[in-house]
Length: 316
Ligand SMILES: Nc1ncnc2c1ncn2[C@@H]1O[C@H](COP(=O)(O)OP(=O)(O)OP(=O)(O)O)[C@@H](O)[C@H]1O
Image (cartoon, rainbow, N blue to C red; front, side):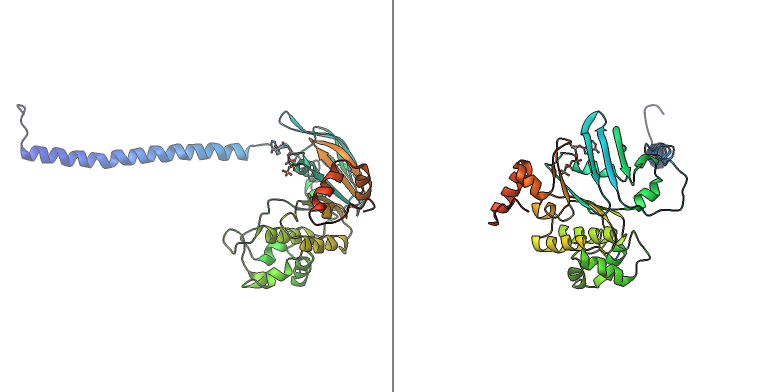
């Protein structure tokens, strides 16, 4: 070579370098893909072999319909080591309505999540029809509970399919009946394809209040003996809320209702009201009893009714 490079050698060398660079780049891509594959595989293995904390006590049996008696017996609950509910005891008789009110973060959602066993208690017992929920068949228990939550999840489906989700055999006229009860029928009728309008991520967007009403219709359509509503009417106007309250009172099936609400107009209708503060029940009673106590509930009542010029009425 003598320190010289002919033009031919230089061209051959460059062509070789180019020839090598592509396979080198491909090796890099393959190593990258392999690492991603290994990471995904370890996640899949982790999920596949995970053992849920909530375990089913029984093998599936013929599913019963419950009466809807709910009891909390000195219940405490912790997320990791933080106590969120402390010594909660109360009873709701079948067919009755209990309202739960309290500041944000006081533990309302956590409390209702213990009934379908989304979590298990740290101390005490939650009983449905007199049996500890940990001893009940999980599918049966959850099949007896209709839940409408704060964060409404609508499937990319027709409105009809969304309402009949928990009860796929529901005839169309019943879908309309429950939509009417939840004050959703009128706005659904005005939509481009009515009940066949596709909503959710791939469909028509709905307002928060409209989503809440569809979620409520879906929960009612299961016709469960226990209905849990977590702030389900917070985004609807007062008139619509009144219509929904009346529907809930007049349901044509027996149903125990647990309603988390911030509005006195909702809680006033309940048979019993619990006020939660920092995971503890600080007040308990009917609307009239709590107003007479002149505590937290009375203050909320005054704040909410002053604005619309109503007079505090200690007799409900
Ligand atoms: N999954 C969770 N992990 C850890 N802490 C949680 C979890 N969910 C809720 N918490 C905490 O538990 C406490 C009670 O929360 P929870 O949602 O039950 O209150 P809430 O009364 O329903 O509030 P809001 O009215 O805002 O919905 C809060 O301090 C909250 O930060």
